[in-house]
Length: 289
Image (cartoon, rainbow, N blue to C red):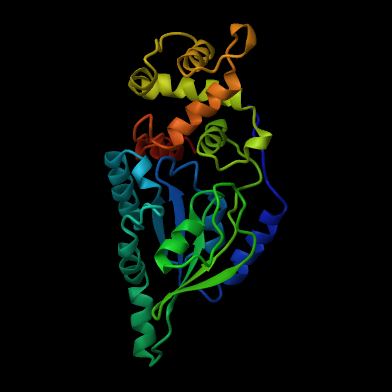
């Protein structure tokens, strides 16, 4: 599958990020806890250069807790503070500011030594579409000042949000990169709904997803659908459709409906808490490069 999606407003977003760096102290980068590699825009590190950074592993309640802990340790070994968060339930939201404060401790101690006191910490929130930035900002600020939605590209403009007297956030639209070099990255983004479904072949995407699930989490499929996962993936999709009553006239299976059911089950953790990527995967990618 050749998946490419780069709306024009994302070029503008890159310019906004570059301009904003002059007035911010730390970058808060949201990643999807299920796919920390694929949900990371490689352009971000180039854009923010040497600014302090905190990683939020969002949607952690959908991911495998043990794998998420491995990711936090992995980032710590790289000198990056990270925390698992669920912006919908509010899990660990109250722990974010202390970590952000820790990330800029040295900088603010130098300011205090120069007599500069009283200015709040200013953080830039970045992340790809649909990673949960707006929900994160709304939860941490206890308000609905940032638009939210489950469609990629809801946030379109730059906006400041005051969290408390010590902490301010700058939100930006989600940003993807112009071209996906790795098909796996594009697929993982599509599975988690970070790419608009209108441009995708959902049934073909479902077959790819089943391929990966058969390899990594076959038990999740058998337990959820009571099916034989040794069959070809297209046959498994048809079996899921039959199990879920996706039958049209003539007894044919509505594979589009079956595919949508499959992805809804994955995105709501009805297939279990699944992490599609581990730190080992990132190390392998780094070694290849």
